[in-house]
Length: 164
Image (cartoon, rainbow, N blue to C red; front, side, top):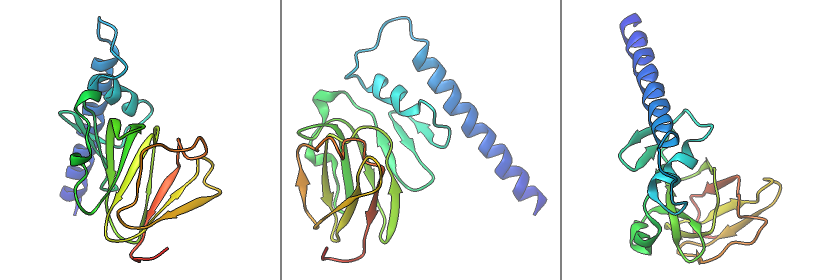
């Protein structure tokens, strides 16, 4: 049991060092970053967060969500696979991309919500910036722009029901 605990501690320390070194490398770049670039999006997502694992242009979080940083011009709806609640940081399904998966679970959101697609078989309930109100979206619902009350949505509940 001690060996397993020590291995877990070593893995956690390695992950923290990797995240810190990636964030530092991105932040200390000599040239200014284009705010629409994948590197800028990855650096912004890493600000104040130490619970994700960076692999290439992706950050994998313990809750099962994945943040994918890509240049704005490469974004499209085809990135959103069946079974995912997909979020783009800009309207019209552009900007950086993150998706949430699961059933009957709440997934927290950090960053800007510019557009989204509930590409799941079940409903999803998106909570407002304050978390005090929410809106339920049927399966397949797409929203190309988000009102100011939801552009920093706090969380999404991925239900197991087909109806709101």
